[in-house]
Image (cartoon, rainbow, N blue to C red; front, side, top):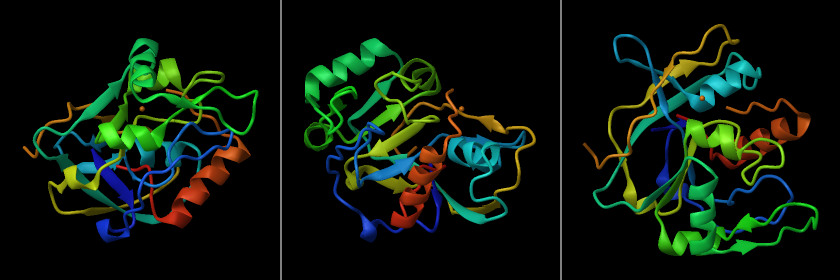
Length: 207
């Protein structure tokens, strides 16, 4: 996993809170990470987030900083791979009705932060849970949202990469989340707005 965008500064941490807009079923605040991409020599070249940006021409020709992240032992991380895993999480933390009555219920992210340290949507989970009308519509690539900053450990020095136009993806490593030891791509104007809003807050889904 890695954080992408600007230099990671956990002093800017924003506590997790509920957002009730129709899209997306995501918390506000927290820290967004995504799986790392490496070249054949194992060098960090990007993340699922940077591949998404390249494929949709977001932040084209901009330099971004990628910070490799590991997690403390015993971190409570829920992995979402299919509808059954999502339903299990929803049963545990509950759901909240969004402002739009036509939208599906959202996870109760505030309560999730009381019981969990992070939620990880895998590549398989994106395929099954992030399509139109699916419960995590708006999660456009594999991502992990940290709900508790105490689990975050920088595992290697940050690297800088340039977001060029898409040609071919690097290898996305869906590594297991271990102690400190890409699915749906919607290119709508709304998703571009969401990405811009996240950038403005300084919390990129990156890595």
